[in-house]
Image (cartoon, rainbow, N blue to C red):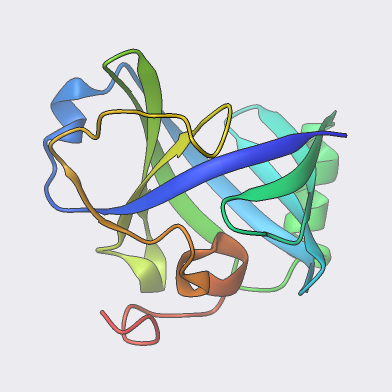
Length: 157
Protein backbone atom coordinates (compact mmCIF):
# COMPACT_ATOMS: atom_id res chain seq x y z
CA UNK A 1 0.00 0.00 0.00
CA UNK A 2 1.29 3.49 -0.89
CA UNK A 3 1.65 5.98 1.94
CA UNK A 4 2.10 9.72 1.92
CA UNK A 5 3.44 11.53 4.98
CA UNK A 6 3.37 15.26 4.41
CA UNK A 7 3.75 18.45 6.42
CA UNK A 8 2.22 21.68 5.13
CA UNK A 9 2.99 25.33 5.99
CA UNK A 10 1.81 28.77 4.99
CA UNK A 11 4.49 30.78 3.19
CA UNK A 12 5.53 34.16 4.59
CA UNK A 13 7.48 35.71 1.69
CA UNK A 14 8.59 35.02 -1.88
CA UNK A 15 12.24 34.18 -1.16
CA UNK A 16 11.47 30.62 -2.35
CA UNK A 17 11.42 31.90 -5.95
CA UNK A 18 15.16 32.57 -5.98
CA UNK A 19 15.78 29.16 -4.39
CA UNK A 20 13.62 27.18 -6.85
CA UNK A 21 15.29 24.72 -9.22
CA UNK A 22 12.14 24.02 -11.23
CA UNK A 23 8.71 25.57 -11.74
CA UNK A 24 5.61 23.81 -13.08
CA UNK A 25 2.05 24.87 -13.91
CA UNK A 26 -0.57 22.52 -12.46
CA UNK A 27 -4.27 22.12 -13.08
CA UNK A 28 -6.08 19.69 -10.84
CA UNK A 29 -9.61 18.65 -10.19
CA UNK A 30 -11.50 16.23 -7.99
CA UNK A 31 -13.82 13.52 -9.25
CA UNK A 32 -14.64 12.46 -5.69
CA UNK A 33 -14.19 14.19 -2.32
CA UNK A 34 -15.44 12.35 0.75
CA UNK A 35 -14.28 11.99 4.35
CA UNK A 36 -12.81 8.60 3.41
CA UNK A 37 -10.74 9.83 0.48
CA UNK A 38 -10.40 11.68 -2.80
CA UNK A 39 -9.91 10.91 -6.46
CA UNK A 40 -7.87 13.63 -8.17
CA UNK A 41 -6.90 14.32 -11.77
CA UNK A 42 -3.79 16.42 -12.28
CA UNK A 43 -2.30 17.91 -15.43
CA UNK A 44 1.31 19.09 -15.22
CA UNK A 45 2.35 20.36 -18.64
CA UNK A 46 2.16 17.35 -20.94
CA UNK A 47 1.95 14.80 -18.15
CA UNK A 48 -1.20 13.63 -16.41
CA UNK A 49 -1.89 11.57 -13.30
CA UNK A 50 -4.85 10.06 -11.52
CA UNK A 51 -4.40 9.97 -7.74
CA UNK A 52 -6.47 8.19 -5.12
CA UNK A 53 -5.90 9.30 -1.54
CA UNK A 54 -7.33 7.85 1.64
CA UNK A 55 -8.47 9.58 4.80
CA UNK A 56 -5.80 11.70 6.47
CA UNK A 57 -4.86 10.56 9.96
CA UNK A 58 -2.44 13.03 11.54
CA UNK A 59 0.09 13.63 8.77
CA UNK A 60 -0.34 10.28 6.97
CA UNK A 61 -2.71 8.85 4.38
CA UNK A 62 -2.73 6.13 1.76
CA UNK A 63 -1.92 7.32 -1.76
CA UNK A 64 -1.96 5.62 -5.16
CA UNK A 65 -0.88 7.44 -8.34
CA UNK A 66 -1.14 6.40 -11.98
CA UNK A 67 -0.07 8.04 -15.22
CA UNK A 68 -2.98 8.56 -17.60
CA UNK A 69 -3.23 9.97 -21.15
CA UNK A 70 -3.20 13.78 -21.25
CA UNK A 71 -6.30 13.86 -23.47
CA UNK A 72 -8.18 11.78 -20.88
CA UNK A 73 -7.08 14.12 -18.10
CA UNK A 74 -8.30 17.16 -20.01
CA UNK A 75 -11.70 15.52 -20.57
CA UNK A 76 -11.95 14.55 -16.89
CA UNK A 77 -10.95 18.05 -15.72
CA UNK A 78 -13.67 19.67 -17.83
CA UNK A 79 -16.39 17.03 -17.62
CA UNK A 80 -16.06 14.97 -14.44
CA UNK A 81 -14.35 17.18 -11.87
CA UNK A 82 -15.98 19.61 -9.45
CA UNK A 83 -15.62 23.14 -10.79
CA UNK A 84 -13.73 25.33 -10.70
CA UNK A 85 -10.59 23.26 -10.94
CA UNK A 86 -7.54 24.33 -8.95
CA UNK A 87 -4.82 26.16 -10.84
CA UNK A 88 -1.42 26.71 -9.26
CA UNK A 89 2.26 27.19 -9.95
CA UNK A 90 4.57 24.78 -8.15
CA UNK A 91 8.15 25.70 -7.30
CA UNK A 92 10.55 22.90 -6.34
CA UNK A 93 12.91 24.20 -3.66
CA UNK A 94 15.78 22.16 -2.22
CA UNK A 95 16.68 23.02 1.36
CA UNK A 96 19.17 21.24 3.62
CA UNK A 97 18.84 17.87 1.90
CA UNK A 98 15.06 17.91 1.40
CA UNK A 99 12.84 18.98 -1.49
CA UNK A 100 10.04 21.42 -0.71
CA UNK A 101 7.07 21.98 -3.02
CA UNK A 102 5.82 25.55 -2.87
CA UNK A 103 2.41 26.10 -4.47
CA UNK A 104 1.18 29.54 -5.52
CA UNK A 105 -2.58 29.34 -6.06
CA UNK A 106 -4.41 31.27 -8.79
CA UNK A 107 -7.97 32.39 -9.42
CA UNK A 108 -10.13 32.86 -6.32
CA UNK A 109 -7.22 31.60 -4.18
CA UNK A 110 -4.72 34.13 -5.59
CA UNK A 111 -2.46 35.25 -2.74
CA UNK A 112 -2.36 31.86 -1.02
CA UNK A 113 1.04 30.17 -1.08
CA UNK A 114 1.65 26.88 0.70
CA UNK A 115 4.88 24.89 1.20
CA UNK A 116 4.82 21.11 1.60
CA UNK A 117 7.46 18.55 2.42
CA UNK A 118 6.98 14.80 2.04
CA UNK A 119 8.86 12.90 4.71
CA UNK A 120 9.70 9.22 5.29
CA UNK A 121 8.20 9.03 8.80
CA UNK A 122 6.15 11.25 11.09
CA UNK A 123 9.08 11.70 13.47
CA UNK A 124 11.56 12.64 10.72
CA UNK A 125 13.45 15.81 11.68
CA UNK A 126 14.00 18.53 9.09
CA UNK A 127 14.96 22.19 8.91
CA UNK A 128 12.41 24.69 7.65
CA UNK A 129 13.50 27.21 5.03
CA UNK A 130 13.22 30.93 5.86
CA UNK A 131 9.97 31.40 3.88
CA UNK A 132 8.05 28.83 5.96
CA UNK A 133 5.48 30.14 8.45
CA UNK A 134 2.53 28.61 10.30
CA UNK A 135 2.19 24.82 10.26
CA UNK A 136 -1.23 23.94 8.74
CA UNK A 137 -0.66 20.18 8.36
CA UNK A 138 -3.77 19.28 10.34
CA UNK A 139 -5.92 22.23 9.22
CA UNK A 140 -8.48 20.75 6.80
CA UNK A 141 -9.13 24.22 5.31
CA UNK A 142 -5.81 23.87 3.50
CA UNK A 143 -6.37 20.42 1.99
CA UNK A 144 -6.50 21.05 -1.76
CA UNK A 145 -9.68 18.99 -2.09
CA UNK A 146 -11.40 21.27 0.43
CA UNK A 147 -10.34 24.44 -1.40
CA UNK A 148 -12.35 23.72 -4.57
CA UNK A 149 -14.71 26.65 -5.12
CA UNK A 150 -13.35 28.56 -2.11
CA UNK A 151 -11.85 32.03 -1.82
CA UNK A 152 -9.27 33.43 0.58
CA UNK A 153 -12.13 34.84 2.67
CA UNK A 154 -13.62 31.34 2.95
CA UNK A 155 -10.27 30.20 4.36
CA UNK A 156 -10.27 33.01 6.93
CA UNK A 157 -7.45 34.89 5.22
